[in-house]
Image 1 (cartoon, one colour):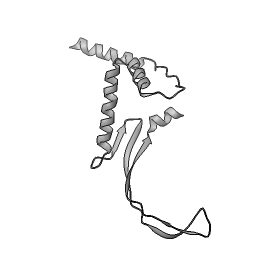
Image 2: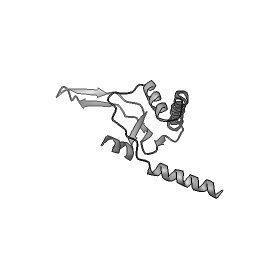
Image 3: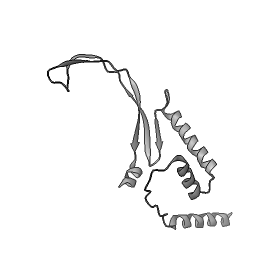
Image 4: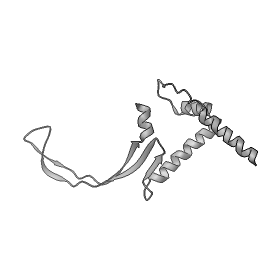
Length: 129
């Protein structure tokens, strides 16, 4: 057993000491197929496995954000997705028209809605800088 522990520690030291992979900037926006190809080329996963991981991630986000759920999903270090309820706005009458000074207008009521907010986290902000 002592031999296995030392090999695990040695392997951990090698991965920690390994230099960071060079990541050049991408000049054009990737399609879904190009994203799948890139991830499968850089990992030991097949395109089918990568596609199933991305599909499952989408399902997981949906389960977190939909009605009667937590309403928040965090992809650690990258982004936070929230569902925010915007309250209803009442109708207003005889409001000054901003486009035609001196004229009054009526604003119809708006019902309550749920919006999705995506907030960048620290690591994502650092990527952009």
